[in-house]
Image (cartoon, rainbow, N blue to C red; front, side):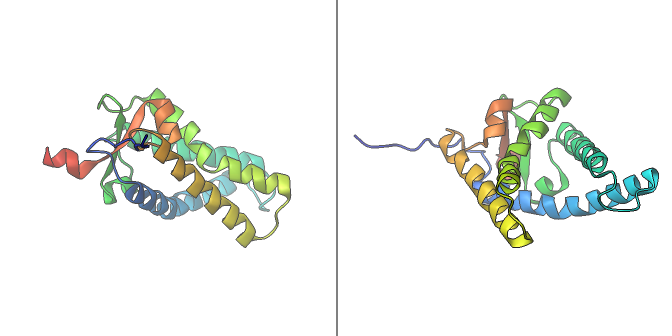
Length: 172
């Protein structure tokens, strides 16, 4: 008896390119969140970082939702995804609806929520320890894609979406 690994579809984007796009997305979103945080601080007259912390977090959550839902429903790619030629579509090949894009955004927080919960419950202090826990959590979540027949992430499998190699689509 041999164990066979499921083969991904021909146009499934590779895990390395998807993770590279995720990393680049983080770099780009740093600027988006800085401007959004500055706007929030100005509008609410926030004078201290801990003043209105939960309001700021909720505001940034909504800003990110608008960013991702808009890009995913208008072309199926964020700026980072265009750079790495990774596209997002429904499993049947159609573009995402706003509802499906919003559900994917909310479920995509599975990338980081377990790590944040671990940090909170263990009381870890220090940037290096927290960064290590987040990195291990992200890599563990990415490794779960190996269990899916099409090598898709958990939130994509639940939402009925898939990340594809745009180069393969353009060649066809």
